Image 1 (spheres, rainbow, N blue to C red):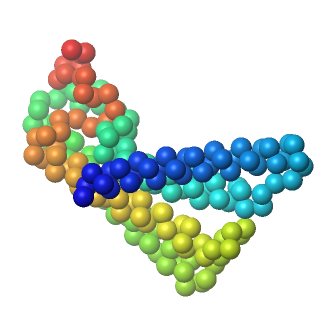
Image 2 (spheres, rainbow, N blue to C red):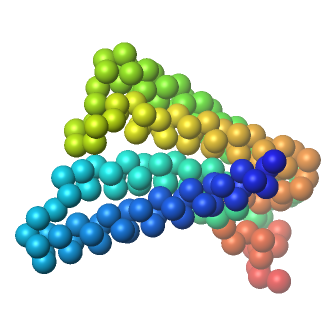
Length: 171
């Protein structure tokens, strides 16, 4: 089940990027060749970007591709490093829960006020629902990361840390 979600996550991110590129290229051709354009093009690419970035947050945690500033952490003993990593992930979880709560309130207000997108005939809450969904998925990935750190399966976080030893030199 998890493998299917991982694959779906990758397909969605890639598809959203492809949609953004196609709409943007079409807009450029229409504007400079035919002196026209698509009214909803900018808004559609903005919402696709929103969804792509928020899905990309959880994808980045899963693939260990976020940047981590760990110049001092690499010098710490293993137990201290694990504790600091758990504190870091806990702070990330708190931030994510705060954003999840705030975006839920935002979507609820859009729904109650029946606000529609400016150029797309769809309620804005549907187009913006990537906000709480993205933060919920990020929360799940951070929980998974905390479990891995606590269990000792993960000794570092962030891109490139697989090659860093305890003393911070390459192997």
